[in-house]
Amino acid sequence: MNRDAPPDPRMEILFDAAEIASRIEQLAAEIADASFSDLLVIPILKGSFMFGADLLRALHATGLRPEVDFIFLSSYGKGTQSSGRVEVLREPEAGMKGRDVLIVDDILESGRTLAFAKDLMIARGAHRVATCVLLDKPVDRAVNIGADFRGFDCPDVFVVGYGMDLAHRYRELPYVGRIM
Ligand code: IMP
Ligand code: MG
Image (cartoon, rainbow, N blue to C red; front, top):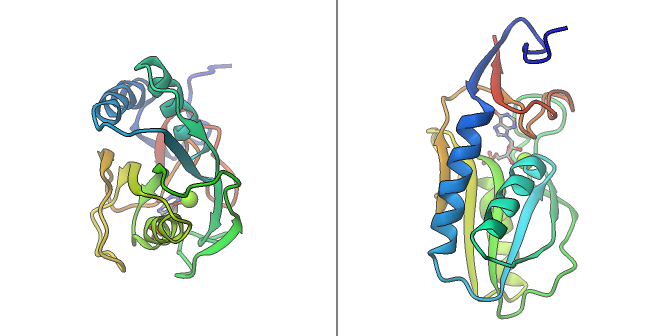
């Protein structure tokens, strides 16, 4: 068995594991230079579990010692089209009053998810809220928001892998790909 072979013959790899790893090191350096104090990192589940884990290890390597909690949001359902409504499935437990918070997400598309998460942290009393996404799709945003830290520009196609799914499949892939 060729363990490096894509799991699906119609998979096109867009960002491979080595590219992702080296970009994450650069992102971690940018974040470390941004003078956060008493940083709380909040990856958005489920899609950013893998990016969040790798980013956190890279942040640790820069000397940062953030607190970590998670928020669980849902907007997609099972298909490839966002429902346009963001639901909170779980809120962070960590207190955020007066804190610096870094929200981490896999991909920025309509902007609804990131804007929703940012508004929620501000409503919970965060002092400074920054955002970091692995992928940024160049589409018309439903909400006018950009990410403070961005990994890659992503073509306007539905992508899977590295945490991102199609109906709960492909999340385990070490790369980001597109199904042709
Ligand atoms: P937004 O709210 O439209 O910006 O979409 C962001 C969320 O939708 C992300 O957290 C992803 O989980 C999901 N998403 C958007 N585009 C894709 C994609 O191409 N593949 C998988 N998930 C996506
Ligand atoms: Mg997501």
